[in-house]
Amino acid sequence: MIGAVGLMYFSLYIVLDIKPRDCAVLTTHAFVLAEFAASLYKQLYVWSVKITEQEGMVESVCNMLLVYIATYIVYYRFERGNVPSNRNLNISNKEMISVLATGIGAFIMSNISFVNSRTPFSATENMLYVRTLVDFGGMLMLMTEMGRRNELALRKESTEINQLFQKQYEQYKLAIDNSEALRKEMHDMKHYVMALKNEDDPERRSEVLADMEQAIAIQESFMNTGNKVLDVVLTTKSLQCQKKNITLNAMVDGDLLADIHVKDICSLFGNILDNAIEASQQVVDKEKRLITLSVRKRNQFIIVECENYSDSENVKLRNNQRRSFFGKNNLPKTTKGDNVKHGYGLKSITQVAEKYGGAMNCSYEDGWFKVKVLLAASK
Amino acid sequence: MINVCIVEDELEQASVLKNYISKYSSAKNQQFNITNLPDGIDLVDDYKGQFDIILLDIQMKHLDGMAAAEKIRQVDSDVIIIFITSTVQYAVQGYAVDALGYVLKPVPYNQFEQIFDKAIVRVQAKQQHVYIKVAVDDKQLKLDCNNIIYIESQRNNVVIHCKDDDYVTAGPLKRFDEMLMEHGFSKCHNAYLINLSEVEAVQKEEVLLTNEVMLPISRARKKEFMAALTEDIL
Image (tube, rainbow over all chains, first blue to last red; front, side, top):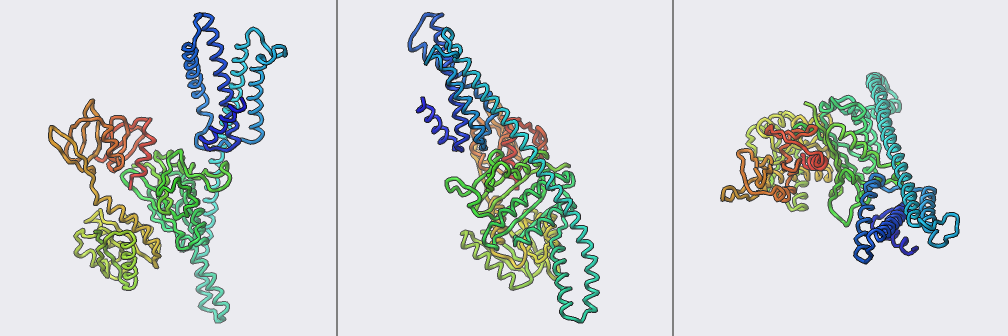
């Protein structure tokens, strides 16, 4: 019996490529399911032998096939939604122990009658029926637990995406204040020039010049795209880029974004550029720190495309493939250690794309990571 | 052979670009024919659509790059324009003349390479034609895929809707799907295989094509269709 469970564990572990604790939980589910299917089959078979009085290998196998197939299909239908296929469950130790206890408990209770018929939990007459019932109960408990867990995870995910939206929005508000300050700075520039004209001391002079240089550097990165919100986002991000020696080339038609909600613009461009900056700053060769962003119109679509150079260690390619595509349920995994808190940037980009009737895809080729977002343009 | 024109008034800068192109040429094994002009006015004067790619300086004496690009666009909507500039100010607006992008002077090679790569992909996509052979009324026809708008399945036959005419040939649609999947076609519905570059718009449950035909999108295929469209659109 222990060997069978071990085999189950290892085959799941190897086939699914998951964490050990997640695998333990899935093995328990599988084990209880198998127990249930087996006892249901035994019960039905004994019953059918009684009714038809026919006994033999063929009937037994037919019965077994029928019961197993039906049980597994029904189970699959119920449990399918509970286990996300693209993500680790990240089961904690406590959860694992409670699942294991449920599984072992169900196993002991259901089989105790076979070992000793004199315990208070033993049944003598309806032994088979009790066994099926207990296994069914155990299975139900495990399923409910997993379902509840899944629901909680979903709820948590959506709050986190919302928080991310909020963060981007706050950044935007902050940036507006910045741009107000910049305008004042420009005004002060006039005074600087006046001061320079009348200043004879060379030390004072170079001080004023340094101040001016700083102010101009900030002003230079100001963009004028035709969309106020995007201007602010781009300015903030391009300042970040400047600090990190990243070249940001943008060719952007801001007018196209007139019908897109402020929050969505912040979230879309904030996330796209944050990701690109994050990846670019890890590139050792400063010459290669480059981000290109373009927003353009083709037919009745708005295309947002962002490319950045990235070292290939950050993008995990399978079997040395040269090019890789990431579909909707196959987004690149976060490079940060904790996959519970990170990796939402791309998800919220997808959310915005789908909100405006479009789609998003990412690809990686020859060192260039590309995010492409399609939005439906209103006429 | 790809025809490139460098429009640049500073000799030094022009020769840097020329060196880059020859470096690119030997690295990627691609042949180029380079023309060098000193001002926008020279480009516009006798432009006959002879270039595939134009590298255009924005600040020039007689006719600046942006104005030159506008004039070029009036006669040639296909040529690829890349700005070479020392200020970002105007370049950001390059979308107005449908430029591919810009690079800032002094141009580092890897930036040049990135944008040139993109340009080459587009030039090659235009130069490359994929043909399919179909039997129509006992005749073998060779159809250019760029000419096909969509293919419709009708009982045992399929109707190939081209820009000029419709052709009826033996099905099933699956055969065409397999053949054309690699060449920018995707199914929006069990009965329709669409050339993605002919998609004008996507509404909730319909695709509008450039020839104003409206086709339904089936719910089951929408995700896959949108993904293919996102990937394919230029």
